[in-house]
Each structure stands twice: as C-alpha cells, then as structure tokens.
Length: 574
Ligand code: GLU
Ligand code: MG
Image (cartoon, rainbow, N blue to C red; front, top):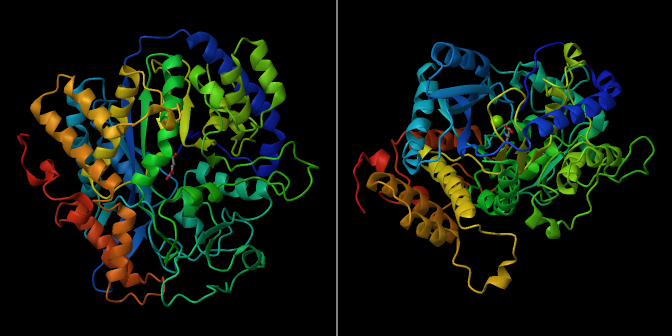
C-alpha cells in the first residue's frame, strides 16, 4: 500500500509543520525525475498483478472463522524462504494494511508475449500454495474482498478488544489497533488521518432491508463517547475506522508503458473502463456482520481514509484551510492526462496554484502540471523524523509521500530515480475474486484490453452514442486475438478467461457479491434480518476456501468446465 520508510513517525501536529517542506521538495523531486526521463522511450511493455490475501483460522468445533493477526510473521517467513535466498524467486510478498493481510506479486514482471498470459494462473497458484505452506492446521489464505464479520466482537485471533479512547491509532469501537499491521506507516496513517480530520472517520453503508430487518434499523454503541451516536445514520451500517476500508482486499495491475505519452494515453483510456470492471468484479456485500445494499468496497475505503476537515468538506466556512475539496483521497480520477482527453476535462479541478505555476514555469505542460498540482493539494499524512531532509536529485520520498496517499482508480507513476523502471500506470478498482482462475481472468482481460487499445488506437473517450453500434469489448478482444500468433494452449486459456468475463457481464454467471448474497439468503440460520452470524460467516468462508482450493464446484459463479487448469485438461482444444 505504498511507500514504506523506516524510522520514528511524527505526530500529526509535527507532520503538519513540515507539510510545505514536503510539498516543495516533492515537486523538486518530481522535476528531477521528469527532466531526466521525459524522453525515455522504447521501454517494453511489462506488467504485473498484485493480489491481496487474508489469513484466517477455522474453528470447526465451534463453527467460527477468525482473522489471524500474524501477517508480519508470515510475511517474514515467506520473504526469508523466497526473495532473500533467490533473486529469481517466482513470487514476491509485501505487507498490507491489516495485520491479517499479505500481498503477493509475481517475482518478475510479465513481458509482452502472448504466451505469458498462460503463466499468470500458475503463478497465482504458486503464491497461494506458498503462503498456505507456512500456515498451521486449520489456517488458510483466502481471497475475499471484505471479511463479512470484520469489526464484530471476537473477529480476530488472538482476540483483541478495541480501545475507543484517545491514545491509539483508530479509537474505534469495533476495530482493535492490533488488527493494523505493526509497521509504523499503517498506524501512523490511521491516527494522522483522524487527527487531521478532527474526528473519527465516518463510514455509513446502507443496510439491505430484508423481510425481518428492523425498520428503521438503528444500533446503540455502549462504549461510545458521543461520536458514534452523532455519526451513525438510521438504516445504515456504521463503521468508524480506516481498517474497515483499507482492511479489504483487492486485485491490481500495473503496466510499464513504452514512453510517458503512452502511459498518459493508457491512464485515460483505462480510467473510463474502471467503473465497468469494478462492477464486473463486485465481491463485497457484507460489512460488520450485516448484509449491506452495496456490492463493492470502493465507497467504504473512500470514507475510511477521508482526512478532509469540516471546512474542506464544505460544512463550515473556510478559515484554517485553503480549499474546499470535493472528494476523499481515495476516489476516482479527476482529470485526464492525454491530449485526446483534454476536451473531456469538465470537472472543476482544485489545484495548488503556486505549484501549478512553478511546474508550468519549469516547462511541464498544462495537463500534467494540473494533475500534479491537484494531487499536491493534500497534506503529507506520515513523515519520519529521519526522512525530512533528502537529496532531491536522487530520492523521491516526498513526491511519493503525496502520490502514494492519493488512492485513485488509476495511478500515473513516474519512474523511481536511479532505476531501470519506465513510466507506469496502475489499474486499481478491481475487487479480488475467490479463485486464481477468476483473478487471472480479470487481470488478463485488462492487460489484453491495453494491447487492443494501443494496437487499434481505440479511443473510449468518444461518447459511445457517436459510434453507431459498438461491438462490445469482448468481440474487439477476440478480433485482436484472431490476428495474433498465439499457441493453442494459450488461446484456450484466454478464451476461457474471456468467457467468464462475458458471462459475468451478461448476468449468465453471478458476480462474487451476488453469489455470496444468495449463499447467505439460503443459509438455514439466516433469519431474513440482514444479520450474518458467526456460524454463517464460518460456512461462507469455508465454502470460499473450498472453491479456491478446487475442492468444491461452483457453476453459478464459474460456469461448468471453464477452468481447464483446475480440471486438469492441459491440452484442451477449441
Ligand atoms: N486494499 C486496498 C483496496 O482494496 C488497496 C491498497 C493498495 O493500494 O495496495 O483497494
Ligand atoms: Mg496493496
């Protein structure tokens, strides 16, 4: 989840005092990178995926499943056995927000050849097996986007009680600080977001009103100091901590483009695809033990890191702050970056004017300057005492500080200084799926889409109404595939992936969210009151685990015989 520096984290008050310094040097660092690398081109297309995992433990006797707070140790073991002993190890592991989470990526990026699409699922399977191999009996790695009983009493192992008093990170009534990764970045972010905002974060998700759901649906919060009573809305599931958002798992893809202009073009084109792919990947219908009325995590994370003050949110006249800001730091993009996107930039963009002018004076074009000046309206949220004074020509921590806490649907990533990495874009909206098959399908779909966009010079920014009949994305991908030399096995793999996506889009197959809803609705214990009990949670996650392991079929979700890899038919023909 971004830059991980070591050192002594500063309080919000101290960090705030250095905000101008961080912004100023962040811009100088960006300018150094830009000047050195603006003309870099002919980089090959490389890409990689990131899968976020939860660690769980099943208690079969008591029919409970809990989140295991041992991500840090598991991560250490995985790194010690993998990348630390073998630089060519096929997997890489990184920390994530929850101390019950880990993140896995392929050891090396994938390249531009079609046959590499055929290795994605194998690599994801390796990751899952590798992580599982360092766990104990009844423990499992699990790719669910939101853990249905996250924040319910006793949802962690070891069991930890939340401490809703000032002094810790979240001050949450539900989410204990022990469930936050021990790396100081994560708890500091949590505390500083809350301090900057001036109150706890507020997440209200509409509850799904079932036959027996109380109406209005309201809750009382015994340890509340008054904040929850004020913030919780009737008929909404109320949550009060960053962990409810950043403690969810997603699936991301990063591309290295051949040049800065290709990266900017891809950024724009993919931005328009984000909401569609997010909807197709919907996998998170449950929050804090309740059935909600939403299917995707996005709005929850957005609220979970919303550090804007009341002034910035427009609730009070501006006095201490500079701007009204219309969105959280975690949200959709606000401006296009490529020339063909310029005419569609119709949102009022809040920018830091001084930074914008500085960038223009230094020769940065308007679109890029306003993009950066928009990201830089934000304050740094974490700062380490040892990392205040940096060498702007060779380090980029201050730039990354602001950049990596702007969590938008797309991220435009300048190369790190002194590296051989090119200009990249990151595609961030997808929810993680239950199986390696589905996750590979979504990833390959997005990567193929970039190939098609680049080779056919597609422009999704043209309103579809002007195109007559739009053939749809899948036929365009298929026609691209027909013109490519692809071996039979890879073609078969890709076609299976595209079939999954097509059937999810048409409604013939369920999204994970829909399937989970039906699972709960049909559960014998479910009382049609929107409540997910420990036992229901246990059977759901157990089922998810069995599906992910290939031990249970799930035709409503995956179709029949789609997954040739799991069914063992390696040479399947068309
Ligand atoms: N877990 C976050 C999500 O579900 C993303 C964190 C990251 O950027 O790695 O979107
Ligand atoms: Mg991540």
